[in-house]
Image (cartoon, rainbow, N blue to C red; front, side, top):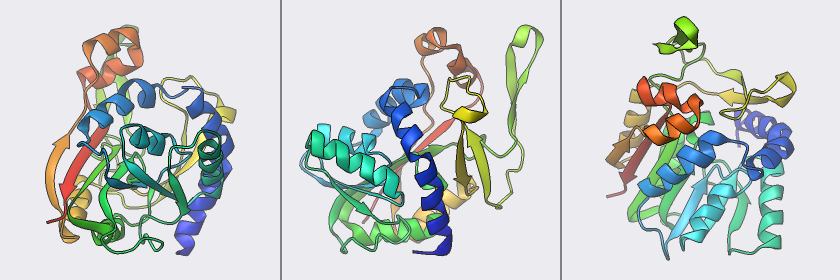
Length: 261
């Protein structure tokens, strides 16, 4: 594991306790109302398949995969997240195995040992996407699939911001630093919360462009089979105004599907 990956793991260890509490309390509107149902609908039928969850965090994504019948292995860099995931598995067993590993190497995983790889909002926060794709291709069997969700690289950049007009109406988005490749630390709160400084999380970011995702997948020998830019429904935008800007102006998320020939 590289020094940079070790630093990423330590950063998430510092977040793990508070992040786990808020996630399990349903505190992230983006996860609960949009990404979770839409990404699960984007996935293929995983019942009975051996699935690796890349960047499993505190285990909520692995548990969702197990609930649809997958045999799940979750990997993450954070010991704090893995401890929380293992404790939940011990309390309510679902047959999930958890390992400390990096999705840039998957050193604990044998070649051609999984039918599918899935990642919920994690691959954008690793230091080397091309290495992650090569590792994923190695552990997938022929015909195996990869599905992942990330922040949309065309709009969600460092210092990008919404433009508001009269009465606070959002008019659009200003995109900045699209070409930047410099890692940085972001200070984030869960989507839809008006969090003060004490409720924010320090998150390591590794900026990538659309071409980085597409070329990284292709260079690993995987074939892109699908893509989605999920859009909040009109009903959801009426219920929670924070989703209106995505509904009307720009997607926040990007989903990509690929297959190993």
